[in-house]
Image (cartoon, rainbow, N blue to C red; front, side):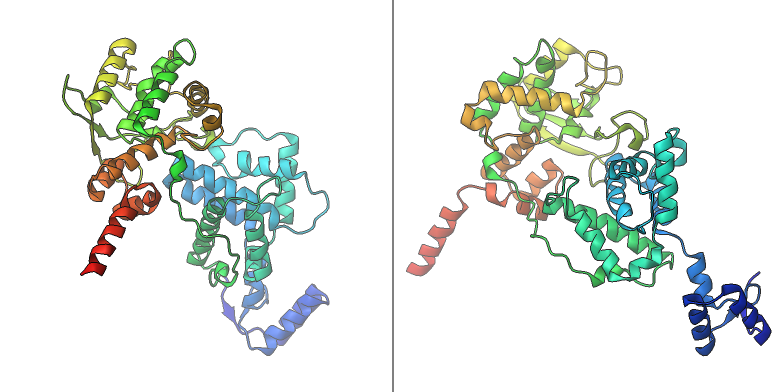
Length: 430
């Protein structure tokens, strides 16, 4: 076993001869002058052994993916992989034979940053890109130099085409980079998180909803009618799913995971949806099931947690009609294709895009008004708040924290300015 200890002068002289001249010799002399401990088996000082044994950024990033993969959801895996694929090409030496950037990115996303049991057989160009990355990658310790950290942040602030990334995109990727560096500090491979030394400011993200995207009840109903006219059967099979997003405030993944046993649907009264599962969509290589949809627990909640959402009679009637007309999948899911599969995100988006052209004027089609199916959820929560539903109750139904709810939907609450003005006038009169 190697251990630091005093080394006789001849051994140090032997190291000088083995190393030759230049920066290594200079470092060795400096270590001896500083009184550093030397390893008996190699005759090298502790600082040089540490540098010699240090991992490259590439090897550490691969190890990080393997460590965190089992604990992350498919979407988190996708985001983690995408961010590391942005970072890794930046942290390389200027080594000859560099592959095309698109090939490097494919090699990282589809091969290197995927667990070994999920990796496809690499093509010759992918294998060559991996060999180049292994040889060209900077050591992890290079991140102690602020210029490398800044280079990474500047890369994360740009899209693949060189245009500026949205502030939310930059902040999300920066958060991944921060977590990777914190992991390196935890393993004592970095002395401190070097990200704290570099400031690259982007505009602050408020995260609030654009009130221009929020439809009123009449517009929402017109959209649901328009959906029913899309395609021969696809639109009809999705009407009730979109209705769940508007009348119940469900997220798309929650609506996709809704099962018959989750629904209490009386004939003429309010019903209740007991949400337990969600089916978010991702790329197959990131899911546990190997399909595009994984079944998971509710967002931001314990895996076995549930959420009870009261739904108005109008939605109850739509769901009862949907079940009577289309039945349910073998596992009880309400919304599925004719073959029993979950509707893809692209299919849902295409139906919605076509329905907007039927329900809206050309000017409205070109506006942010209900531009995405998710905007139905925003419209639902905005409606609740404007109807006077207390924030804690609205937050519980939406599956939000109260602070997040009020921050996100602050601009969608109508009438507050007039109320404030009346209160101020009353105070001034007193």
